[in-house]
Image 1: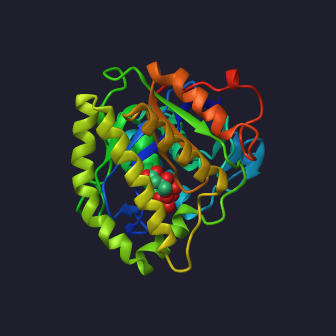
Image 2: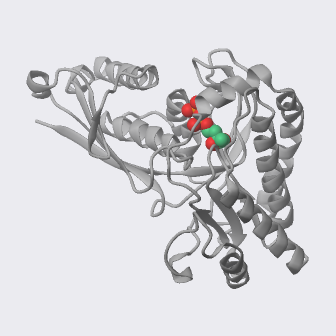
Length: 348
Ligand code: DP6
């Protein structure tokens, strides 16, 4: 018999960035962060986990099929995640001897993204979140989402936030074992239903410097990074308040300043890390100009470890924003092909 479970996990886009580890092995961050999880129907990873005693004959070890290509499941991060989930299942099996011994069977994982992998679109976040949840479902683990968030964090830091929907904080925690370093929901998406995200794909190419490598160099070399650590706790408090009060003006200001502070820190890293390209900068100018013209914040922008721009806005402003973006970016290299009607905000 083959046991199987499938799930999807969406991408999350941080408005307060995780950048820096106090413990690289356990993926423990130097600061709290906060993100918004997109809806299940937009950018997401779909993962099926299966296991069977019959797999032992053909593929005795765990295997992964990622976007149709066979990949090893032997990276230290995957190993840690699989080991933790197997340990939880094994405990369940010893408490309930009638259960099949799934923890001893090889696992087969099939995973696919509906967006470019590793282009700075948080694919590792959705990927590890989906992997953890699919195996937890397969193993019928009774564990609460916080426990799964701690496991996902060890796969990829930002993945701990993708296990929850809506506005999600990741508390850095203080414990050395990291058991208090996991995500929590600040607000579900329903209290602020007008919030939208638009992703401008400035380049779908694989990024130059991975987040993991980039943040290690930043921690070692950047003086601005230390300044960031002092600013982030205040920004976290103000951001949580802005979300709960649905205060878009404050949300917009913290989001753009936080993105700019993060990219300034990347530039202050030695050697410098450049994630933004000319199209990214054009998008920044376009949003700054439309806010100026409107005399209020109608949109804000943020960039992760890549050139793609995420614009957050309220739905009622869409016509104005779309017209301005059209004028500012149409025909420029990197601007998504197709007509404006192809663009629409992603639900969150
Ligand atoms: C810029 O979670 O990809 O997107 O823990 O090393 O896997 P690892 O890093 P990762 O870093 C994400 C960095 C970021 C900011 C964020 O999502 O908070």
